[in-house]
Amino acid sequence: MENEKPKIAMIDDDEDILEVTQAFLKRRGFEVFTALDGEKGLVLIRETKPDLILLDLMLPGIDGFEVCKQIKEDRNLWHVPIIYFTARGESSEKISGLKSGADDYVTKPFEPEELLARIWMILNRTYTVLDANPLTKLPGNNAIQKQIAYRLEKNEPFAIAHLDIDYFKSFNDEYGFERGDDAIRSLADLLSPIVKEKGNPTDFVGHIGGDDFVIISDPNHMDLLSKEIIHQFDILSPHFYNREDRERGCIVIKDRQGILREFPLMSLSIAVVTNEKRKLTHIGEVNAIAAELKKYVKTLHGSNCVKDRRGSEPIGSNHHALLNPSRELEKMAHAIHEKKINLFFQPIVDVETNVPQGHETLLRSMQAGSVLSQEELFNEAIDLRMERELGRILFEKIQIFTYGMNQNSWILVGLHPRIFLNLLEDPEKPFENMKMNLHRLIYQLRSGDLIRNDTFTKEMIEKIKEQGSQISISLSYGGPLPLTLLSEFKPAFLYLDPSFAAKIAADVTQQTLIKMLVDMNRTLGSQLIVSGVTTTDQKELLKGLGVQWMSGKIFV
Image 1 (spheres, rainbow, N blue to C red):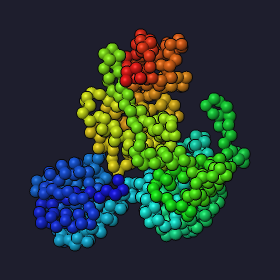
Image 2: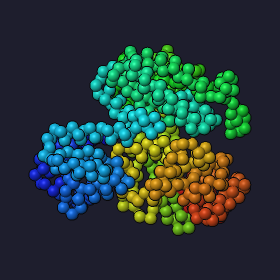
Image 3: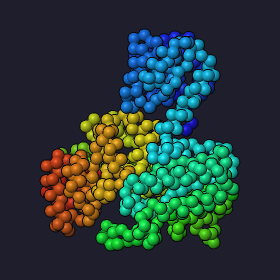
Image 4: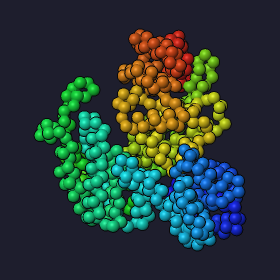
């Protein structure tokens, strides 16, 4: 939450220092929690999850060194910075405190303004380090959002450029992840010097993730920056390829059907959003325009920069599509911003007992008179760079629904890997704030994503395991059936989407397949769920094949 006060936990056995410092920091915009000894301090820290800890080393009972040690060993708290208080002249104490994991120290008696300066220095440094992209070390999504919000608030002329590499995926598939990482690092190394040399001192370069970058400058400088960046990248790009591909001007790869396809060498697309001709008021609006411009610039050959030159006048029929923002994307940005997104919980029923065993989430949005599916919502949120906001809405609604729910029940969540990973970096920590046991969260992954084994999906699976949650593999009718995935990932569930139930009566082969899957799941100790059951005939046929758990309109 951008306007939330930073939280500080202060542990000191001197009540006078506690009272005076707490009052001073509260006046300066902090939320301050206090404790008089180390044991209570640890409880306080785990309950409040502060942004920074002020810690006296000489405490009754558990001393400050032990408090610091326990914090740094806690996987939920290790990142919280610590400033400790030390007596004047005790250099050995200062060294020991820093060795135990503290970030800085202040000597007693201290000036409140000095303490304040150190607090802000540490908070800013910590925020930058935690948010930095691990590959390029450039500021990440949190910093980007803050920079955009700051420019919107100042209401001065600005230009925000979204950059991404064309045909990066085909390059990555052909040459491998290491070469792909080299290309991304090289672009990052190219951007910063150009912006420093040809931009303003206040210009900003950030790395959203993957091959997506952001530059913030003023409208006049952005034209020059974009031109120079494209020029330098076009010189650099061919050198990532081997001689044969370079001379041919493309790479040749077999697609999934075994057909040879040509992909051009990497180029750069830049979409520039500016408030030159109209007032922009919130991040969702900026992201909606950027998403529309990116869709257009991607249709052009080679490296290109497209700048939004549209004013606030009504859209006329003679306007070029490039200069028209997508009204639908703007509506979606507004819906997410205002939390006008519906989440339905459909029961998954044991047909032997007719008792719900859990619920699957169905995320929906009414737009232009039609219902957008969960996948459409996720894709639009990603285009808008609002995946974190949509993820927050999803988990807020899950939190409300699961309050007081049967402890043995569970929630099956379909979640795009990029949204899941974005939420892990969310300062609001939605997973940590969940009241339900995270073991009861089952994440739905599509078999196609697992087969592709892309970076986002691999990282999501690793994080799900760390979280203590489980996975479900979703299959669609006529889609790939990678039986090895079942033994490799040992999912809690195998989930058959509604297309199976719709065709089950007419397709004998499909009936045989479902019976085989029932037997295989029993062997693996997992459960088969068939969704989209709408009639009693479907239910009875599936039950006869051995399917025990189902979902669909008939059970609602």
